[in-house]
Length: 297
Image (tube, rainbow, N blue to C red; front, side):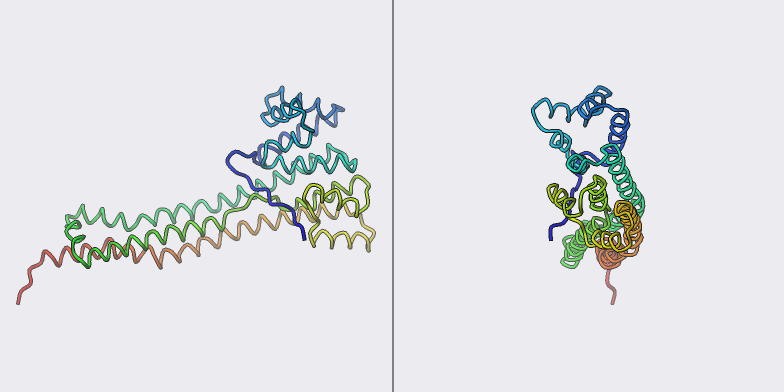
């Protein structure tokens, strides 16, 4: 089964927080009766960077959808929604407002998760320096750490401690990366299907239009369509309610991942960081004391 393509963001791509305001301004211009191309020109004249790219693309001969998606990132989602609305004849201004709301909520969810992850991630980075702090403390207290390196046991302790520090760093980084939110927009498939059906086309035609933008209804969307058919309820509103529910679940799941991260970070701390502290910080000090203490019979 084809699925909605994951549209991840990178450093150069447009983020949802920058795309949503532009889409809302476009919606206002379109509702005022301004033609789409002229609306983009007005937006570019107002200093919108993405609108400047779109106008430049139109000047180069690209169609409007391709010019919109040229900025990358969340603009590709906006371009796909624009194309769906244009094909089925759905209200373009309302389409832009719906996508803007979806992008804003997705960005807010990512921000919430990033804020929740900030404290445990910073704590993990701070604790990872604990073995090196022990070495500095030993030097300040006057222990001969350098001499212990030449000792076979000391060299083994330092090598094992360095290995554990590297392992803790990699382990912690993977745990934090796994808890980070991805670049997908929850509920986007439901929103796109609602846009297609709002043009008055059949479900089969709506699915064909969505397939043209590399999107396919999910199992949850098909359940909603079946519910609409059996209950006689409007499918568009049911789909938008489903999109809202998916975004709510994405926000809750993100916060739960951040909460679980705090406890999972204890694993590299106990398995790697604390043993590394003993091997790099405590063991050399003990060897230094033993080496400087004469044996008496």
